[in-house]
Length: 464
Image 1 (tube, rainbow, N blue to C red):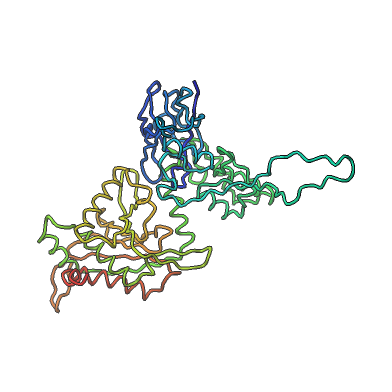
Image 2: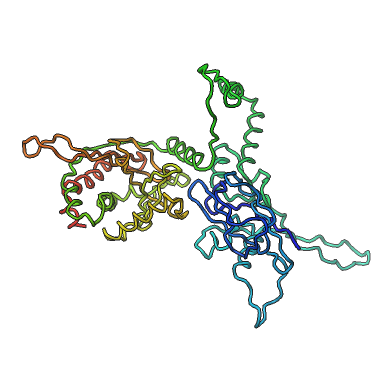
C-alpha cells in the first residue's frame, strides 16, 4: 500500500491560494483516477478538482472554509501498488492499453508543469505554456588508459548545468519584477522548487534590510499597536469591532484594481441619452432580447468603428495591441462580489444568440461556475450599474483592458423634444478609457455611436 498526497495545483489561473468550499468525498471513500474530490473557490470561480490518484481517501487536508495555498497538501489517497499513480506500468499489450489520463498526468509531473490537474490546462486542452528542458551533464564514461605515456585529455564542450527557475504564477512574476528582483536568483519553497509569493516577499524583506530599513512613516508601529480585534486604534482612538482577512476573491479584486489605478492613466467622459425609443422597442417585444443585449450590440458596433478601444497595452514591447474579435465582459454582482465574465467571441452572435449567451454567462457567474477563459479573457467591459439603482459612476478599467462603458438607471426626466418640454426615459453613459491608447476625440466618437443607436435603435439595428 502506498500513500499518495496530491498538492493543490495552480489550476491554470496563476492564483496562489483557494478556499475549500465542499468536499465531494470522505475519509474511507474509494476514488477513481480523475474523479472530482473537492470544490474550491478561487479568486475567479468555483472549480471542481479531480484526483490524479486512484485508491482510498486517507486524509483530507483542510476543513471546508479553510484557505489552502498552492503547493500545499490537499488530499492523501492510499493506493495499492497497481493503483498508485506514477508506479511502473508494464508495456501495453493487445489486452492492456495505457491509461491516457494517467499518462498525461505523469508527463506533466515529470516536466515540472504547474498545471497538474488531469485534463486541465494541458497542451491538449489549449494551454500555451511551454516547459523548458533543464540542461544536464552527460553521465561519466570510462576513459581509456594511456599507460602513463601522456596526459588524458579532459573532455571539452560539456555545458555547466543551468538552473531554470520554476514560476507558474503571473502574480509572482509581477511582484518580483515590480520589486526589481530576478526570479532566477530565488530559491523556491514550493514543490519541485516552485517559486511562491512568500519567497518573493522574503527577498523583498531582505532587500529592505540591506538598504538600512528605511522608515515607512510609522505605519509598522501603528499596525503593531492595532493588534487583535477589540484593540483601540491608535489613529482614531476608537475600538475595533472586527478584523476581516483580505483573502481569496477580495485579495484578487484589490490587486487588480490597485494595478489598474497605478498603471493606467485613465480619463472619463459621459453623456445623457434619451432611451425612450429603446424602451419602447423592448416593451413591444416582451419575450425578445433584453435592453442590455441591444446595448451590447451597439457597443460591438462602436468597437468596430474604434478598434483601438478593443485591445491592450504591451508595456514590455511598448506596443498598442488590437484584437481581431471581441470578448465582451459583463460586470455581474454576485454573492462573492463583483465579477466580469466575458461572452467569448461576442462579435459572431446575432442579437438573439447574444441574448442567450449573456443570460448563460451571467447565470454561471452568479453560481460561481464561470470558466477560467470567461473570467480572464475579456477585451472590453460593459457595466450595467443602473441595475443597482445608480445614475452614474467613474468606473475603474478592468486591467489589462483599456476601456469600460457604464450604463446608469433609466428614469423619467424632463427633456426638450422639438422645442417642447416632455417626459422622456433618460439614462447616463459613462466611459473610462486609457489615455495611452487614444484621446478624447476617439472616446467621444465611440460614445456617440452607442448613444445615437440607443436613441434610434430601429435604424441602428437595420444597419448592423
